[in-house]
Image (cartoon, rainbow, N blue to C red; front, side, top):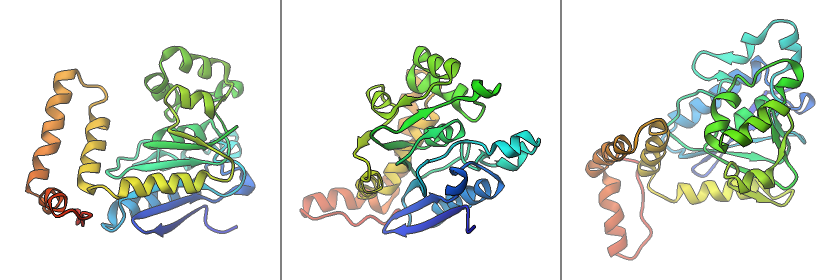
Length: 256
């Protein structure tokens, strides 16, 4: 059967691949621990600056393995640090792009929206059908979709259980890019490379300011941005940025 999650380095990018195509990449214990380990690798390796979360097979992820749910083994799909899939509540400093060449449903949707950006193929469906099985979208669907989409659209998805196409979700701001079938991975990798071309500490500080500031008032968000900027003044990269501009060359970032 092989590993449930694969990882491969592409320059500064770690490509993380869900690899249970025979089960539509449904989350079981192996996938959860494998995904958590891959994020650990991304976080711990100083040479890696961005992650791309993709998949083998025609479906990004169909959610929880219902065989485990039916047998009462739900805890196998949860890790202490990442919660569902070892991922949806995992604290990270580095951005991850979800690359959806196939449908992301139930927990698959929740893995996707737990990522920082989403690239999807035309016709891909994203949804939370848990109510069709007398379940709740507990891994971020109920908690996060209202914030990401607005209450009315989120309510439609959560109460009907019907998925929405990536094209509509792009219009609503949930999906960053919709591309032709077969071009998703290349588009996600190109986006990752655009991010990795920038000063990595500034990228991480910008991400942290957005994530930590979600539930803050306006004044607190302004102060948070200042707090995130102050440590950058003492870094080599802060000195390198203006120097490279003056010398009319590409900056050489050190992440320090």
